[in-house]
Amino acid sequence: MLTDITIIGGINIDIEGSPFAELRREDSNPGTVTMAFGGVGRNITENLARMGANVAMISVIGDDHMGLGAREQLRGMGVDVSLIHSLKNRNSAMYLSILNHDNDMELAICDMDIISYITPEFLEANRKAIENSKVIAIDGNLDEKTIRYVTEQFSHIPLFLDPVSAAKAVKAKDVIG
View 1 (spheres, rainbow, N blue to C red):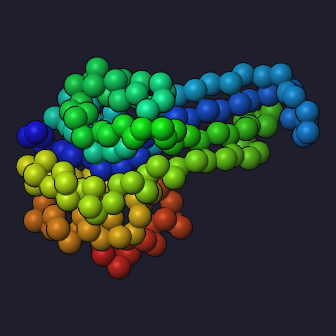
View 2 (cartoon, rainbow, N blue to C red; view 1 turned 90 degrees about the vertical axis):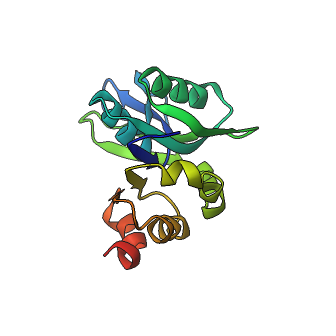
């Protein structure tokens, strides 16, 4: 694999519910439910592909139809998805949010445990692909030891980090500044 930009990060399935009227707790609320492919790393990858970049993604998904669909969507956009690994008997990362009538989030549940499989060892097995990149971008949802591994092992390649949130940016402050 020879790409200009390699993204290391998560792929999510985003599920969002929005009621037609005032949200009633402890009741079934008529409304709309939408599903979309998401995840910080996947979103960066999609946007770069839409701008015509030569991009690859390193990630993990479950062997469910939604994760496989997210990978196929990226492939259809010209992304090198050869390093998006499907893990047997695992669900892809999912983010479920419930909005209120004003379209503000009332609550959410996220199942992002699968991203913990993106470890230094996982990346070391894909080292050659990463080293062949002109630029690396990483997702702030990665574990701190994985962020440290990337910043130490590939310091000769320009690196971009999407911190995701102030709370998650703290994981990178000692290695990035």
